[in-house]
Length: 120
Image 1 (cartoon, rainbow, N blue to C red):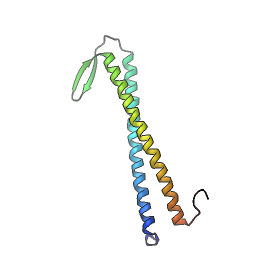
Image 2: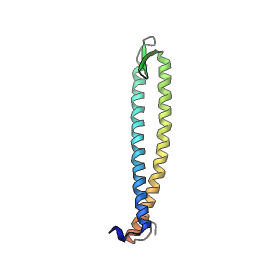
Image 3: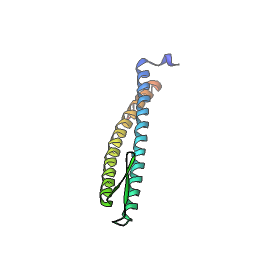
Image 4: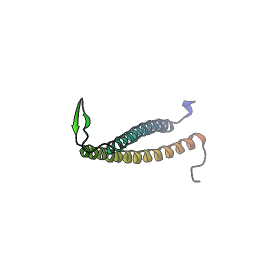
């Protein structure tokens, strides 16, 4: 059956698969960042309940260091902001790829089914 498919459509199908893989990667990365934001926010909330003079320890590579509560809270806030920017960037990429995917999918369906173009 693939011999009946033109090289152009075969190329479009390959591009569809590639875009789908890219979308899956982006969605996976976005989910990881969203989970990291949740964990970081939870850590910040827990830390807010700790006394200001209580010792706070942070993992730095393979070493655990004591830091001030306010400094750690500031670092956690900065981490959430950075992750938020990455999530926003991934959402933009996801939207662009989803649009490309849908357009290409419509073209392939039209070529294979001989149907009318979308919007006609």
